[in-house]
Length: 394
Image (cartoon, rainbow, N blue to C red; front, top):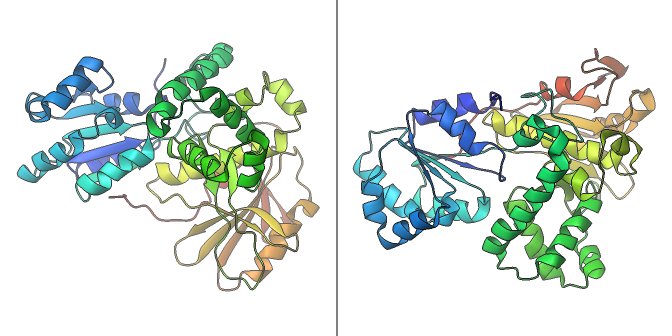
């Protein structure tokens, strides 16, 4: 499979000159290991899923670290989180050495707990999501962005079936100690059917015959393993009665299509879920663009109880704000920009950009002005307008 350069590479290389350790989290098979092995090719490599390796770490962690050849890539450290405190000790004994530890983990929340406790100030933290449409023109709503799917699209259905099975057997069991995987699979399918909707935990609980706290726990598992993201409502006090619950989106649209039983690009075009899938695809691409550029993940939606709604609000520094409507239509028309215009008028004190993202015929189409101050453009062009500043997380 031909390697595709990742946009986050410049951030990783810069961080390796400043920090002793780099830690990359994200969903399984997003390309974390491939990225590190290519970018830091002189580093040795240890997979922390091998039972013999895990057993040795647990019986003699100091001896294990002593025998490592630095710099080193430690892959899937969530299997041996106890190593982090020993790595911290090693870093503190050699404070001038940078770029020595390159660590990956597939389960963000448990790993981040260990980092917060053991590696604060010693490690630069990154998230790698599947490929973005900026990184590869093969990324699409139907196939999503997982590198292996894009390399062999003919076996996408088989790949996603195996991915879900592996995810259930490894990540879900390990994080949540969930025994009833059949019900959890039904839960994932239900979540897929609610993609793009305001989160209603009671709705999930009623449909599955479960308690709301359990639904919250299971949603947390999906979020911490980077299968979904919850987009919160815009938080500014605009003198309106606002919706307070977040909206739910799958991170990868290819996985979402698989879970919804959509088996071809043509079937996707006929699907009643097409609009919400495109909306989620746009959300994920904006998030990828932010985190690949070293920015904080920051995306919101707006909906008040009088019916005014805008799909996404993307903040930047110095009171900058980008309003985005995602329309699956192939044609952009002025009436589609009504909500952008209405909300824009209420945002006094902000430098506001207003964009309607649609699907023009062809890969790139020159954008045009729908109404004064409101432009229609393809997603690829809209991503270049994201406000914000670079910055490493530590």
